[in-house]
Image (cartoon, rainbow, N blue to C red):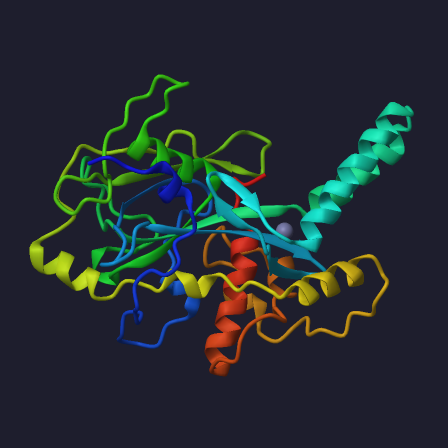
Length: 317
Ligand SMILES: [Zn+2]
């Protein structure tokens, strides 16, 4: 099977029409693959795109600004984020100013500009449908977060490190002399991904470099696979792109040119503080995103808490 990298990297327009798994009422955050707070291993099987779709993931970038998570207006196409995003424009401007300050030997100003730029930088996220292994297929260790195949398709929110591993698996990497290993999402010949999360001493960010693929094996029994395919999450709902005016408004608030009248709180953050490492209390307490569309209230709040959680994912710098 040949993979068109341009297509692979392009934004999927729409993935499966879905509903999440039924059963007991769960928080929105329960739809996500969890990783152990203090590091450890979790095995997942990334699932392929739904019928008619051509990518197993969606890509987005999120700006943390004014205590909110604002999706970047840029689109990923041919490995580049391009588009008309006022926050990205300002980010680039800050770096230009920083370079000027460096040339003038104004170190303090350069550092201050760089800090401001980093604060509003868009952070990439990649969402996949995935099934979590209740046990490691090779050593039989139970999933440390208690999730399993019985949870059905969950959403795996990938950082750039792991996303690159997925792309490398599909397409290889000529520069690094790494051969492609094929379609890891294939239901019969694909592979599981062992997510290895580690913290280096003194480093608050987890590292995922040792994550790797297991040997090829079917994703599950034919009945399991059929069931999972019928319950794929609609990943496109995770990306809420603001209008240019909304994005501009957030930037103007950040620059203190406009007053911030937007909502900042609205749910109990303590509910999510121990869910997993994806959640940071200080972010969660400012979680309501002004760009959410009309939705049932519970769901809306849950999605906002998700946004807060996503902004706190470690391993992304
Ligand atoms: Zn942007």
